[in-house]
Image (cartoon, rainbow, N blue to C red; front, side):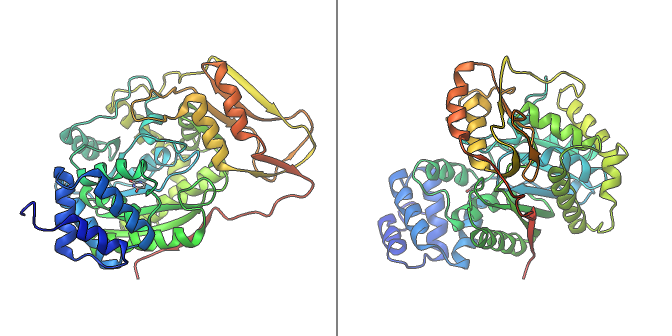
Length: 430
Ligand code: URA
């Protein structure tokens, strides 16, 4: 493709004025941006025009395909197993990948979970697993294939070769206020998932205060867009819309989220984490042709735990090692008696991040023992002096800013709150 085939300023004008880009214009644009001919200022202007004016269905599909074409694609057909993957749009305390991968792999399907690190208040799966001494995220393609063949599941870092255009564009969106555009989020997520080559994909699309999409209507639109993109590309795709107003489970951080995941794999753990793990596993196994799989049994009888232990060992980790513990803790206690009426996800996510559990810049070092452990859930009745949550950090100086962020985020009242369903809707291909 000639690098001067189009004038990028014309394309910016088209989107700025509410027009549609043609397929060959989108192909050229993504290629020219990846190669550096279209400069970041121009792509930023275009992203903002897309943010403000949207994109049509055909344009979103073209953008996704162009981003896939910018890099390599993977192919698991040589494994002789059905492959099924899950992607979550991210939230506070979202450790579901950890128990889910071994649970689904226990049924003989292959689960390639190419994951990322956290940025900002939402945690990253790899950061959580790196709390396990020795565990390594970086695998070669052949190590990943061997693990999928021998153990059935792998959680590892996505290689830089998948959709490099997205990598570049996502970093730009992050610093130009253009992350929350449905066409850009959908094409970003789905380009990587389609390039990964999975047969089936279940999307966990979050809504609520701790999610990208604050309201359910926008999260439904995002889910429908992604399900359509996956289906059109031949990936069996469905989505669950799930509530992210309240943190998932009791642990928010890294090492504490691994501990909670191991509880789930031992047949225990918080009810909401178990509910979502089981629902996503059922959905994944249904797409993989096993709608009647007894998912709860595999959590309770140790089959999922067995896959977990083998996968941790295969990646150099010790599943029996002590997980890191912070040097300092600070517990917040109830000042009144009553029902816990709300625990807002976003302030608790920011609080854990300020304690050192997350990073503000890509090269920041995560403190694996830092985070927040909730001792109560909405609906619990508490008395004055009862422990509500504990902050953990290596440096006590971090407590003040973390406490500022969670100020008022846990409320206590006289009436029990209404119970909100965790799983609001299922979206399937039209
Ligand atoms: N995750 C992604 O990979 N891309 C987005 O745009 C948003 C979340």
